[in-house]
Amino acid sequence: MNKKRNLTKYLLCGAVVLLILASAAFCGMARVGGGSSVFSFLRSPRYQDDWRLVLVNGDCALPKSFAPPLLTLTNGERVDERIYPDLQRMFDDARAAGLSPFVRAGYRSTEDQERIMENRVDALLREGWPEKAARKEARRTVARPGYSEHQLGLAVDVNAHTSEDEWRLYEWLSANAWRYGFILRYPQGAEAVTGIDYEPWHYRYVGPDAARAIRETGGTLEEYLGVA
Ligand SMILES: [Zn+2]
Image 1 (cartoon, rainbow, N blue to C red):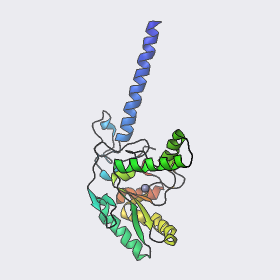
Image 2: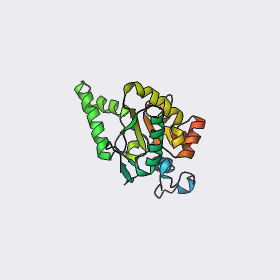
Image 3: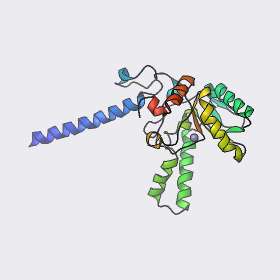
Image 4: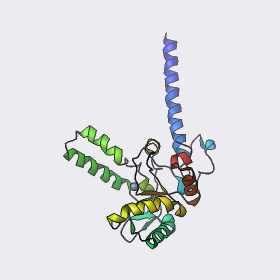
């Protein structure tokens, strides 16, 4: 009897360890460097060490001590300096097409993301939501600190200066952003894969090759990286 109980205990512990290792491998696969995982031999060399393809979503947290090289835009928003030339080119061409894009939100630190989450929870509490339900509801639209793509410096929320421009701008971006290495990160109908509601304004830099491939398949970053 005792032996049987011990065996069950060992099997349960083994299953837990395997689950932990599997989730580390899943997220590590698409991360820059990826740290030293026992599964490193399984990682595709295509994604390894490519800063443009780091995956951050509800399951994959920002790599520890992540600090992108930042550049401050004229309106005070910041982005990874390596995406700036392509971002500027995209905006120049959008402006030439009669649009008025600007970056409403770029890079966010963990503290920024914490503040955004707390503000959302506070707003819901003021609406009369019970605390626990408010936190759950907030997580539907606001990423937990450490799990927001904005913390990479590779994501931008693009808005137009005039509201009538907004939908024209979103249309233009969805047709053209890939040419500059950006993808619509949270497409309509992909909520089950990305875990985030459709956001026509949120663009993510992945580089021209990945952006072209993702556009051709009509998929998501998760699908491109083979982790969906
Ligand atoms: Zn965003």
